[in-house]
Length: 213
Image 1: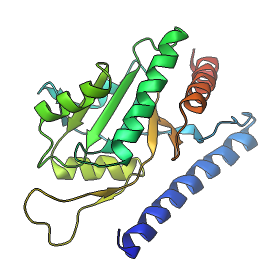
Image 2 (image 1 turned 180 degrees about the horizontal axis):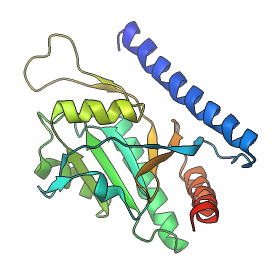
Image 3 (image 1 turned 90 degrees about the vertical axis):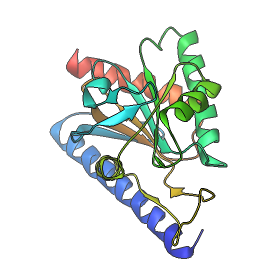
C-alpha cells in the first residue's frame, strides 16, 4: 500500500478517535458516566444520512432497515484478501456467542461493499452466507456509498489507473455498531476480539436500555 494511503487511513482513524473522545468528555461533563469498552462509545450517537443501497436480495436498503434492532456494519468488499474475511470470521464468533447467551435477538450483521462494480447482490449473498446465514450484504451507487461512508468515518480508495477486474481496494477496517434508532453508537478499531466485542455490546445495550428504555 503506498505511503500516502497508509497515512490517510491513519488520519481517518485518528479523527474517529478524536470525535469519540470529545463526545465522551461531553457526556462526562453532563453527568453521564463514561462507558469502559475496548472501542469508542459515542454518548451522543451520530445520525445517519438518508441513503438508498441495494440489499443482497435485490430490494432497496435504506435507513429504515437499521431501525428497531442493533446492527453491526463493516465496509469492505468480497475480493478482499485479508481484513474482510478476518472481520466476518470474528463477527460469526460474536453472533454465535451472543446467541448462546440469548442476546442475539434480531441483531443484524451487514457487509456494505464499496466495490459495486464486482460485488453484485447475488455475489454478496453467496459471500456473506458462507460465513453465517444471518449475515447480509448491500452495495449501491458510488455516490451513495461515499456519502454514507464519510458520515460514518469510513475511508476507502481504489488504485490509480484501475483497469480490468483484478484490483485491490484500500479501506479502513473499523466495525460500526448502530443502535435501534439507526444512529452510530460505537466504533471498534482492529484488532477485534470476539470476547471483547460481546462484552462491549452487552454493556452498550444495557446503557442504551437505561437511557432509552
